[in-house]
Length: 478
Image 1 (cartoon, rainbow, N blue to C red):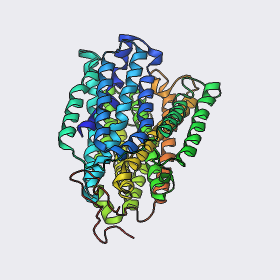
Image 2: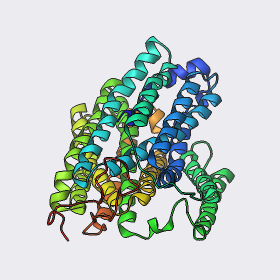
Image 3: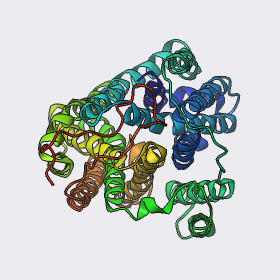
Image 4: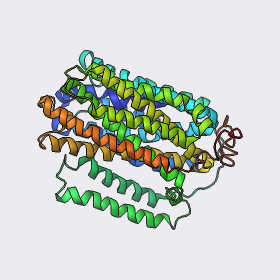
C-alpha cells in the first residue's frame, strides 16, 4: 500500500500544480507532455517487468521500480526547464510501470483466493485516498511552498516503501541462468511506444491526416508484427504468445481494457463538467470524482464473498451492469444538474468497477503458476493502460468535434457552457458504449473462471504464500 501510494498520489498531485510549474519554468505549449510521457513510459514497461518478475522474482523488480521513481522524483524537483521536467517524468513513469503490477503480483503470491479480493480492496482504497489528498497537496504546495515539493514529497515514501519491502518481504526463487529476450523486449517496447504515442498525440501534436499522424502508429504496428515473429522462436519470450490463446486471459484483459477506458473518461471529463458546466470550484469537482474511487474499494473488498458464492463471471457481470447503469446516469446530467447527482452516479460506477476489476484479475492470476503470474498480471495491467490511452484519444476527438475542433474540452474553461455541456454529454455516451462492451466481454468469460492452479506459489513462491489455490467445494459453479 505504501508503494502503491507513490503512483496513486503522483497521478493526481500534478494536475493542480500545472499553472505554478508553467509560471516557474515556462513551456506552456509543452506541458501536456508531463502527463503523456508518464503514461507512455508506465504502459510500455509493464509487460517487460512482468516477465522479469517471473525470471528473477518480484522483490528485485519492485525495488528497482521504487528506486527509479525515487530518482525521477528528485530530478523532477530540480528540473530547470519544461523539456528537462518531461524527461524526468519519463523516469518516474519507468518506475511506476514496475510498482503497480508488482504490488498486484505479490498479492497473488501471498494471499489465498478467499483473501485476495479484500487485500486488493485495500490497494484500491489507496487510490481513493489519493484522489482527495493528491489535488489538495498539489494546491497547498503550489500556493504556499513551491511546486517542486509535489515531487520532493515522494522521497520519504520511497525510502519507507523500499525499507519495508526489503526487510519484510521474502521470496524463494529458483536460481538458474535465465535467458533474457533482449531483442523481444526492445521490439515490444519500441512498437508499443510508437503505437501509444501515435494514439496519444494524434490530433494534438499533429493532425491525424499527416505524415507523423500516419507513420508513427504504422511503424509501431510493423515493429509489433516483427516482435510476434521473433517470439515464436525464442526459448524465454518476454511476452509468451500463449497469453493470447487462452480464453480466460483474453476476456479478463479485455475487461481490464474497458475498465481503463471508463476510468480515464470519468477522470478527465467529470471534473470538467462539474467546474465549467455546473459552475463550481476545483475542490467540489474533486469531491464529485472522489466518490468513484470511494465506491471502488468498498465493492472490491467485498467481492471475494460474492465471487466465491456465485462465481467470478456472475460477480463481474453484476459489476458491469452497475457500471453501465451509472454511465447511462451520466448522460442524464445537464446544465441544471447538481453536484450531488453527479457524485452519486460516479459512486455507482465505482461500485461496479470494483466488482469487475478485482475478480477478473484474481481469476487470471489463479489460472497460472507462480512462474507465469508476473506475465499474466503485467499483460492485464497493460491492457488497462492501453484502454486508457486509446479512450482518451477517442474521447478527445469526440469533444473536439463537438466544439468545432477549436480547443480540447479539458482545456476549455472559457468555452460556452451549453456547447461544453453538449461535448461532455457526447463523451458520456461514448462511455456508455464502452461499459456495454465491458459487459459483453465479461459474458464471454469461461463459466468456471476461477480454476485452481496446481503449484501456484509453490516452491518458487513468496514466503507466506498459500500454496496452490484452494477453493471450497461447491462454492464456484462448474
